[in-house]
Structures are given as C-alpha cells and as structure tokens.
Image (tube, rainbow, N blue to C red; front, side, top):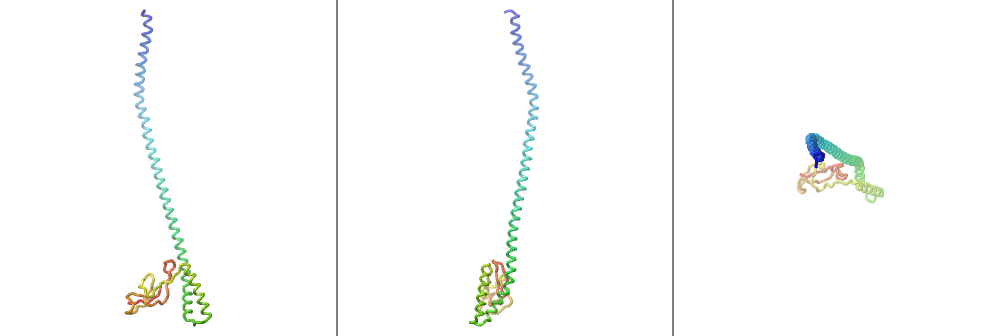
Length: 194
C-alpha cells in the first residue's frame, strides 16, 4: 500500500490514540475535581444526620414533655377525685354529727319510759327506723365496754380502780361514740380502769 493510503489509517489510529489520552486527561481532571465534589457531597450528608439528630432530639423532648404533662394531668385527676370523695365524707360526717344528739335524746327518753306504754312503743319503733337508716348510710356505734382503751376511738373522762377489770379496760360508757365509714364522728366518752 501506498503511504497515502496508509496515512489516513494511521491518522485514524493516531487520532483514536490521541482521543484516548485526552479522555484520560479529562477523566483525571474530572476525577480530581470529583474528589472535592465528593467532599462537598459528603459534607451535606454529614449535616443531614445532624439535622436528623436535632429533629430526633426535638421529637424526644416533645415526647417527654407530653408524657410529663399527661402524668401531671392524671395526678391532678386522681387528686381531684380524692378531694371530691373526702368532701362528701366531711359533709356526711357533719350531717351525722347534727343527728347524733337527737339519737341520744331518743335513747334517754326510751330508757325512762314505762313498759307497756303505747306511746313509748311507738317511739321505740321510730328509734329503730332511725338507727336502721343510719346503719344503711354507714354509721355504726363504737363498741366500748369491755374493750381495751383506744385513744383513737375513746375519750377517757374518768379513771376507776377496779381489780376485777383488766388494766386499761373500758368499764363504763357515758356517751356512745359513732363511726361513719371507718371515720370517727364522735369519740365514746368512757370510764377506764387503772
């Protein structure tokens, strides 16, 4: 083949060879430029986890705040319910306190009534009805005679020397005491043996 015919082929080869190094140069330059771009791309990725951390912290903080608020509200609700219940008990105790002198007078009147008197029998029936109603409400008399003295239930107004009774034992009840749902409405007035 002639040189002229070889030249275009060689030229094509040379051009193709030249193109490859140019690509390599471009790739090397681009590769060199890509590294800072990769760092820049990596930098926002590093910032993204920080943003996620901030968001996560905010979520955790708000969740904690919500849980504390819910707990405070639950405590408030329970405290309010207890206060309502105690207000009811206090109100009922006051009503029972006002009724107890009437019960005492009933008992005194019935103790002095003659047997066989129709009026006394009628009053006895009314007294039983009153005591049944109080019992249904949760009002019970305190048992005192023969029991050991308890300052939570009894009010000692007299001390007696009695060898037959045990020490610190209630010998006589001067005025009945009453409980309302296990709360003392009135202490029993008692004589206690030394």
